[in-house]
Image (cartoon, rainbow over all chains, first blue to last red; front, side, top):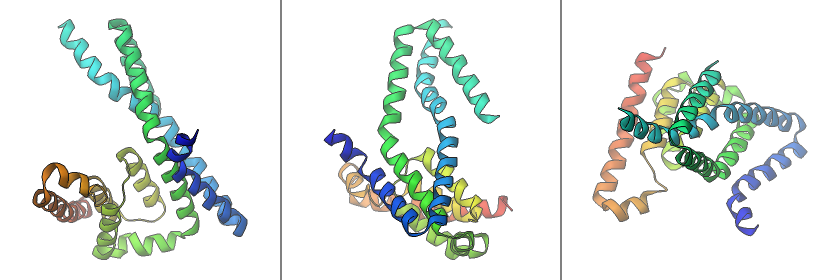
Length: 68
Length: 159
């Protein structure tokens, strides 16, 4: 739990900043949230296949070299 | 569209790999997850930070600092920012895209991405340990200069 907290402290810090921003200026906070939401969605869609492919590629090369 | 092609390719190789070797495919899946989990904290943090930055800074401010008209001064600024920050590549590219949508210029983002990838002020101590001081300073210095060349080429190609 503690290690997890330490690993994500940078993320938590940015979240706190975001909360402060929202408290100070509603419009800016809302805009930040919408930007984050949009980019988060976009990246979540793209990242999994990239990671999987980078791992599978080596495996695939090996498989091809075996089958030929 | 691009996403769907990516997923289709991924699924295809995954099925092929599964038929070749189930155990190794499972291993690949686990490794992929681990690699993802490894960068997740940094990734989430940078994402939120950029969201806040884009909300606080007006597009006019961004384009004044890093926009097309900021010229070589903007390129220099982008290079320095890229040199001192430590962001993984696949976060850096979408980030540059977001900044460009927010008003940044192509030349400036080219310099930013290339110093981001090649110049590491934060990682220098580690680099010195492995390659020595001279080599490290030379490599980083040359990479920094090279990023201006990259910016120039992008400035010529992208209009």
